[in-house]
Amino acid sequence: MGFLAKLSACIAKRFKAARGGSAGEDDSDDGSDTHGLFFELRALQVATNYFSELNRLGHGGFGPVYKGLMPNGQEIAVKKLAMDSRQGLKQFINEVKLLLKTQHKNLVTLFGCCAEGPEKMLVYEYLPNKSLDYFLFDKSKSPSLDWTTRFKIITGIARGLLYLHEEAPQRIIHIDIKASNILLDQQLNPKISDFGLARLFPGDDTHVNTFRISGTHGYMAPEYAMHGYLSVKTDVFSYGVVVLEIVSGRKNHDSRLGSEKADLLNYSWLLFQSGKMLDLVDPTLKKYNPDEAAMCIQLGLLCCQQTVVERPDMNSVHLMLSSDSFTLPRPGKPAIQGRVGRWTTTSTSAFTNTDTNASSTSGGMTKVLAGSSFVEDDSRNSISYSSIEEGR
Ligand SMILES: Nc1ncnc2c1ncn2[C@@H]1O[C@H](COP(=O)(O)OP(=O)(O)OP(=O)(O)O)[C@@H](O)[C@H]1O
Image (tube, rainbow, N blue to C red; front, side, top):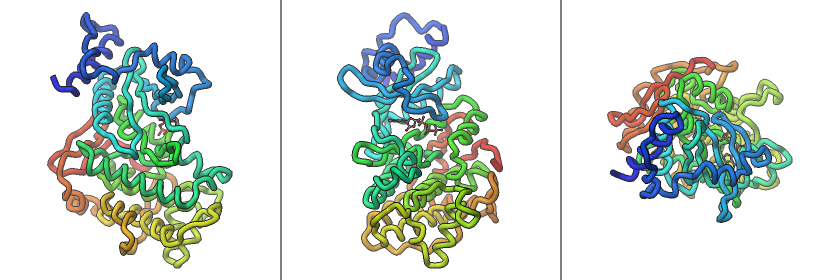
């Protein structure tokens, strides 16, 4: 039996036992090459001081996250996932398999999992500097993100996404790129978290609800938000929003700023058109590199183009960011969000066939979400439809 098959079998057995079924007499597969990936519930209880409130790092759409300390001094973050159903089991297995195969310096590392009780847990490396939004949107903290650090974060997220889209064993579309899903390590290097976790939800409703809770709405590409059209360019759009947030130090929507400035994409576009795009730069930044800042704003706008094919792929984004001299295409008007839940898109054909060409160069298999389960689409590499509600 291969490693992943053993892992699946092992997790399945534990789920079965947790549900009260007969798991079989022995758990000896723990001693195989899956050894070390499973954390005993008891060990995690001790590490987190019995999931004490003091150890609680926060609460996301999947449940609470706790800080833990292992006897060897290793700090961990334990994400408790509430799921009991068979559907949940299948997704949990998919997810753990997927995460174990993805290793990159700009992705949060999964150490292992625990599947002993009704709640399943994922055990990650602990990142001490919280998430990007914690710094970025707090005027007292944002000065600690100087321009060099911000540019490093913009580049690092691009590297992580390039890995997920092009270099991972199977293509992964994150779907939920946003400032709160970018964790920062000791040196403020960015690490993408929560990749693929949305797929762990057992039901479509919960899945959609998660988007609501996380406030991901402002980051969603219009063709995905309105039609469930999912491709790597879905992530590119969200990445563009995050880039503009990093440069400007503000959220993608802030009604306190007045109608002209409230929508970040709209405001960035207005400034770009009038040749004043550097007015967008976060006023708390004492110094910044104007060429880099201008490039990032233009890049952010390009990533947020309404027409899918006009958005660059992450390979191009990475090239633009790492090259000394790169002429960026002039962006058109980005997809601008109208009143909450609606997008001012003009054409549905804009995203239907052109993107197939745009992303078919890389080949390989894509793993995307359709409803509540994984779909492997090897005929084209990017297209799937999900059941997200229209017009939220
Ligand atoms: N590996 C980690 N190290 C340190 N803190 C973490 C880690 N993972 C998550 N956290 C913290 O735990 C909290 C909850 O994280 P989680 O990823 O579950 O939710 P979220 O991203 O805030 O929201 P959502 O799940 O709706 O997207 C956040 O404050 C986050 O900073």
